[in-house]
Length: 244
Image (tube, rainbow, N blue to C red):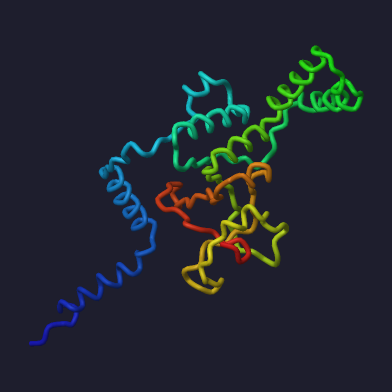
């Protein structure tokens, strides 16, 4: 007497295979995959060594230095200390896409202009000379972007971060990337049709030019967020209208 085909091992294997094909991209399987990955990460430890230091902006730092955002002259002081300590590379993940303008800088600039155009700077008077020095010192203290740019230029090893808006581009970009960003592009040899192409971006927010021009390198800080809100992978590169 012949057995029904449903009693054969190959039929059971077929049913199991079809079942897994059906649920392979389901939320259940994805949740199990995420849970297994998270468990593995939590139970895996590696010693980063003593050659890497993370300088965090935490509650203790804010308590000691003051409320955020700090003056960029403070960032310059930190960078000067790192440079003097012999750091090989400094990675700055703070987005510095807007100028930091102190309200008093405009007043100081007008006073300096008056000091120079009125001829007071040319007089051989000790008091006036001291006044000029104080005005210059005040300008340097309030022009925090220039202060930080000067420290970055002296260090020569600062890597800055910037943000892109991810998405499928249509047409041409609203603005071209500045030269200090474009010089960090990679020659990948990929095209938009390649499966291995970097993820596309439709907009970019670079650092201000005064700082970006002093950076030793600039990279993106975009995060790849999974469906459950977790971050388990990194975008190695993004494509901005043909520039990677």
